[in-house]
Structures are given as structure tokens and as C-alpha cells.
Image (tube, rainbow, N blue to C red; front, side):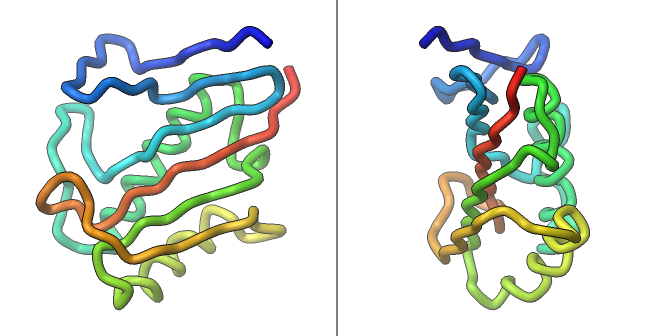
Length: 126
């Protein structure tokens, strides 16, 4: 099955990954973090960071021709499980009806200042 790789225009990264990969009808979104277009972490507030992560996820899905309506699985990584309620409130705003399957774990993240990272899998027939 051929695969298509998607990255933001002009994106450069020290990390060898693609923002999104489409394999047939499946779209895989790499872990998105709460950074702006310059790669700077926005805010130290979990709600604000979660909102930014969802903006970044939405942009990644769009690159591959998908949307939140197509998402079937989400993995959420929190640096502190005490952030769960605030994250969940923002999450619910993005998936108000029939939310996808989800796993949420507490774990350290690769960059200081990150409170959350989210990756997604979507089923989006072309």
C-alpha cells in the first residue's frame, strides 16, 4: 500500500518524523505538542497548552485530508495526571459527540515545559 508523508511547509525539525502519514484510508498524526509556528511552547497552563495541541492536531489532520470527525483513536500523554480534568474539559469541546477511543497516560515528555502531547489515528477514505 503506498503511503503519503505530510509536513508543514517550511518545517524543519531536529527530530526525524513526519507530521502526518496517510496509508490508504488511514491517517496517522505524530505526537503534537503545544508549540506555535516558531516552535515556542505556549503558556504554562494545561488548558491553554491543550487548546494549542488540538489546533496543531487539526492542522496536521487537514494536511492529510482528514478532520476530527475522522479520528478513531487518540493517545494523550500528560506530565502530571492531576492535569486530567482540565485536559478532559478541552478534549470534550473538540469531540462533543461520539468521541474516539482514547488512552491517557502520565509520563515525562521529551522537552522541558511541555505538559501534554497528543497523537491521533483517523480513518478518512479518499
